[in-house]
Length: 213
Image 1: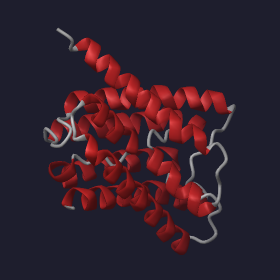
Image 2: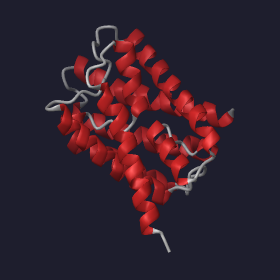
Image 3: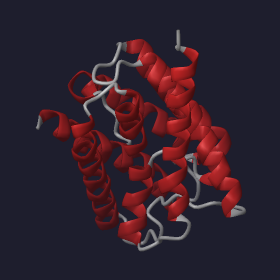
């Protein structure tokens, strides 16, 4: 249960801070800026890895959990409970933000700025890169320490900085599900549910090929 609570609160804090930054940036006419939002996501990921990494691995992302399950780095029986608590954490974060900022229509939802297929492919590549880093710097259930936190959070911030204006740089189904459900904005949600998983699975396959004897 400790692991599930860690995933719940880790995902709650990620979505609360990350999408909260987007909401406040919109309502304050861009005071935080896109760069500020991107760095917020990176910073909160770093904080959650060091807060919950030694308890649950700090996946805080269903795509990461599925990838670890497929790679054999975690017990497959843990996949559904992990994802369930992650999604619940994301939903609770969006409910909190809806209460605090009722004027926000999208609640920080990830939405493509151009063609859906453009964002779909971009999210696959972004998630592939992120998972490739995660699976090579972490042990799955336990993080390796400061190296893993810095590497993973840097990739999250970097990808959000350059790809955020196009696809929203979700790379995380839970991060997208929460705002979409609570705001009622399901436009292109399929992109953010499928692309991160596809990208993460590709990363696992590459990792297996690269380390095959």
